[in-house]
Length: 409
Image (spheres, one colour):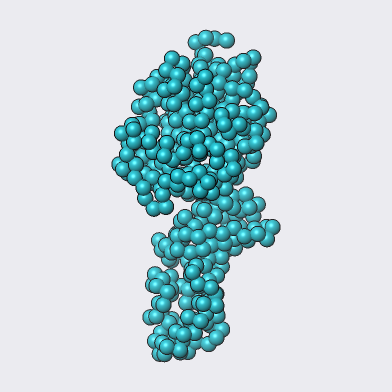
C-alpha cells in the first residue's frame, strides 16, 4: 500500500452528507486525514439548487416521533438517530457558525439570507479550514477490501483507508459497486415528481393553485392520497399535494408506469351530500342569476368556469334552469374531478430516489454496514427518502453526524 495514498477517512460523495461528515470527523480528529471524492467538477451542487436556491435546511418538527412520519421509507430506522441528533442540533450548528435560520410555513427552515450560497459557502469554508482534502472530478471506479483497508480506485489514482463513508446520493454506479460487495440494494425508483397530462383539459388554467385532496387507486386496489395545495401547470400538476403523493406512492406509481387516473376533491371539508345540498339551495335562491356569476365556493374565476362547463352546464345558463342531473354532475366535479395522468416529470432539480442500500444491512447506532466493518453510509445512498419540507436534508445531516461520531474512538 502506497502511504502517500493512505487517508484515515475517505468519503465518497461531495454533497450535504459527505461534507457534514467530513467537517465533524475533522473537528473531532484534527490530526487525522480526511478526503472527499466527488464525481462532478463542483461540490454541494444539490444544496445550491435546493428550495428554489434558498436551501430548505431542515424542518422545525422537534419530536422525533412526529418527524419520522414524513419519511415514506426509513421512518422506523431514523427514530433513534433523530433522538441522538435532530433538527435543533442542525439549527444550532448553522447558527453557531454565523448562519441564522428562520421558520416558514409548515416548519420549513431557511437561512435568513434566503440564499443557499450561505450554506454552501459555510460548508466549503469549514472543510478547507479544518484541512479536509477535496478532490473534484473524481470518479470512483472500484471499491474493494484488502486486509484491514478499503481500496478505492478512481480515474486519478488508488486510495486506501480503514474507514470509508459512502454518501454518493442516488448514484446507480455506486449502488452497482456496493452490490458487488454483497451489500443488498433496493432497486431505486423516482420520488418527488410532478404529474404529466396530455392532452391537458386544464392547461389553460396554468398557474392556478388550490387546496385540495387528491387520490390515486393502485394496482392492488388500495388508495394513495394527500391533502394540500395543487398547482396546475402547462404540462400537468405540481405542488405539495402532488409531491407528497409521489413520495408515498413512489413504488406503486412506478408499477403503474406512471399512467393512472387522478381524482381531485376541490372541496375537502364538504361531503358529496353537503355539496349537493348547497347546490340545490342555490338553485332555489338564485333564480335567474347565471351559473358563472354565483361563485359560492370562492374558487378562482377561471377554475369555477372550468368546473361548471365540465359538468355539462352552458355559460349563460341560469341557476333556476338546472335539473337534478346537472346538479349531481357539478357536485361530482367539485368532489371528484377525474384526470388521466400519462407520465411524470422531475420536480425542478430536486431529484430524489426511493431505493438504495437495504436498511436492514445497516447499524443505525453507527451507520456502519453489518456486512463489512469500516464501511459507513449516510444520506440518500440509503433506502431513505422524505416528502418536501427539509426532511431529506435532515436525514443527510443526522446520518452523517452519527457516522462521523462513531469514528471518534
